[in-house]
Amino acid sequence: MDMDFDVIIVGGGPAGSSAASYLAQADMSVAVFESETFPRPHVGESLVPATTPVLHEIGAMEKIEEAGFQRKYGAAWTSAESRNVPHNGFVNPGGSKVDFRTAEVLFSEGDQEGVDRDYTYHVDRGRFDSILLKHSETLGAKVFTGVRVLKLDFDDPDGVRVVTRMGGREVDFRSRLVLDASGRQTLLGRQLKLKDSDPVFNQYATHTWFEGLDRRALAGRDEQADFIFIHFLPLEDSWVWQIPISDTVTSIGVVTQKSRFAEAKADREKFFWDTISTRPDLLEALKQSKRLKPFKAEGDYSYSMRQICGDRFIMIGDAARFVDPIFSSGVSIAMNGARIACQDIVEARTVRATTARTGSRRTSGSCAAGYGAGTSSSRSTTGSTSSSPRSSRTRATASTS
Image 1: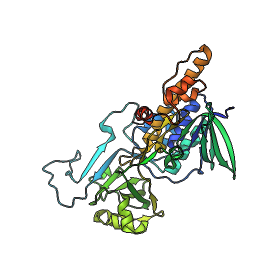
Image 2: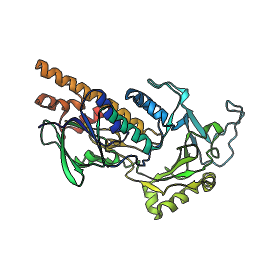
Image 3: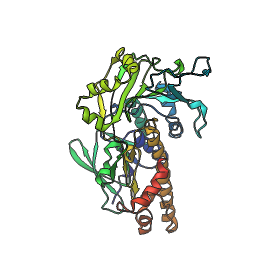
């Protein structure tokens, strides 16, 4: 099989674009196929500090800083408790009384390897994702937008045939390895029938943006106003996110059990306001602001894969696993998963080159060892698309934690 690229990446979100940047930096030929045209709206608008090392390593931090995204110094939670909780003399650093109905964490409270600042960002994902994808292109990745990947064909043991829809016709490309970063479309998970819905975190969300929300209204102190907030509701397994997008724009989303939405038999808007009304303080603050976008729903909320890597494929980001990211970990897991996967891929290329030069049969033993496929020994090390989910899942756990 003649190869068009060393690696083809399905999806141009943070997982796919980060992987493309890492591989392009390693002088590998890499293509990204993204079905949508950027910029496009996307949920998941708050980052955690663990994204910082990746942004530095791929060389994109300066561009993110220049974009002027809202800085995020911490996170806070509020309770639905309406009773007055005595503060017993406790005071905040500025001398104000402590409100025990709120809790917070500051990023300055702990050190993380590779994190050189006490803040991260709240982001407009349309702009953020577009910056990362364009950055990968400047490093040498080939980026195709508006091109949908229809199927991945593993019949040839030496590579992968990637079937795309491009300009109204089917066009095939070939690569040694495929990274599935297709997000919640879960291309490979569906194709290989590896996807399991999470029976516990069976959540549903509806969300929108508001202009002019007084973010101090629910903050325990003014310094928290630009934190991400999780407002717990007096309903089982239900909460509201509050994420600053700019000085005046705030993303608000209601998260609850999917069964509750089904039982309500209401449209998105009515369900949103009915659920918000269980927190009168939040309802009042939102009624004083202006909604900017139509309500959007997020279903198929939590799932896992029985296997996320095998001979010639690796799944990363939401294509591999999705659990409601109440702590805003989704983008971080996507970008760090890309980082770890690419380390394996680059190592596999080195092993392949060494094998070709010396005639040895040493393999890397990683999910990416299929990159060096062409000898039966490398395929038996990683397994194939039908290899043991248990052994592959063991390796995958280390890649996403």
